[in-house]
Length: 71
Ligand SMILES: [Zn+2]
Image (tube, rainbow, N blue to C red; front, side, top):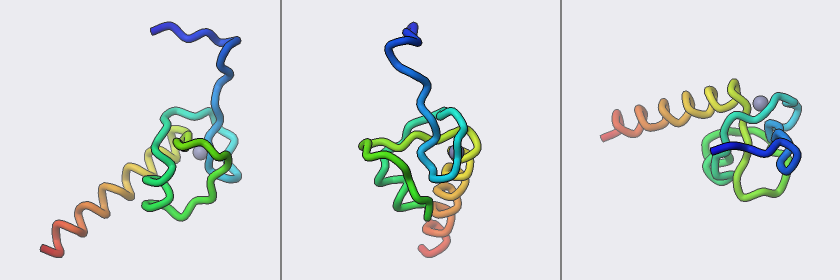
């Protein structure tokens, strides 16, 4: 699928203080549940840059691991 640049400007990372281009968008609730980040914007989904997405993924993975250990 081709993107039209003029119609949709590059989104920025929604984590407060971060100014990188967004790489992924994640449901805001998921991000808030997993991380203690302050998010900019009011969108249903939060945009994350590559670095923040990696952190988020890592955190959610570790959470799952902990849950598995508890059983
Ligand atoms: Zn970021």
